[in-house]
Length: 168
Picture (spheres, rainbow, N blue to C red):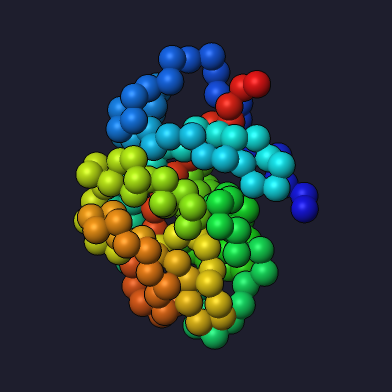
């Protein structure tokens, strides 16, 4: 599987002191550091940074076309690849996220956020970028910690994140 060249927001993390969980990432004041995520398919591990304000400000939308399977959107850990596939399939939400250097968290990334910084996230259900079937995709509630397979025609916000690859 070919992985895209990282953008500035996915680039190698500069040599910095890693912030405490829940603290802002350096030079990204409206962010929350959620922890280290294992890379998928041999990709490097990375720091996951969630953007609660961007997540809260996002408009509620359906995940995608109900009944249509989208290729490349089933990664459980790689939300960047899912988001790029969603944007290529015409998702306005995914395209807007990528345009500002964000992407939509995958199911696994949402689990990491729920485990480490759930109390700093806005309440409610949020789409992840991970498709479950032609009719459903994974959603996450940070208040309860529950994951849910939601009908793609439900309207939720999406979880905005960035990643910074760990230096080896």
